[in-house]
Length: 214
Image 1 (cartoon, rainbow, N blue to C red):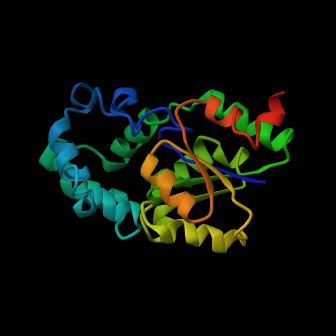
Image 2 (cartoon, rainbow, N blue to C red):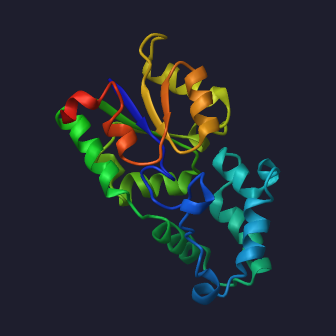
């Protein structure tokens, strides 16, 4: 059995589709780095409903390097320091691992014999950070991310590319846990068995996994 997990909102307890559950990595960025938080959000992430025109969208689809994009906009938000230091600050602040989910991942691999994967919208630098420095490589067979595949996660081609890479058959229906309902719907259309994630119980109580904990 193949089981996929999203990063932000599932494996990492930070950004979440539900605004009430978000833990912003940049909450203290003004005090810490003298960065105008509102200006940075607007310049780099764009406005709601128009995210595809933002520098971040170019990065997460593999069309622009994160550090180069940040170097172009950070001075406009009041930051004149080293871009590498800013990136390190961002990644470290945005690394609240959901230990309960990681425990489930270990149990799936050790007791359930499952293959575990990550399917996420990321640019190259953070994907490498997650895999190498946060230790995702020890828990998952592979990390699939949007910049590597060249398409956003909210695109059917994202899931079709993974199906092709792993030779997933139409009836295999890999499990997938993601916090965004629209992504879950898209994955289901791609032939996956996707579930909107709200807590670790969504994994433990899934009908295809419940036997591991009974």
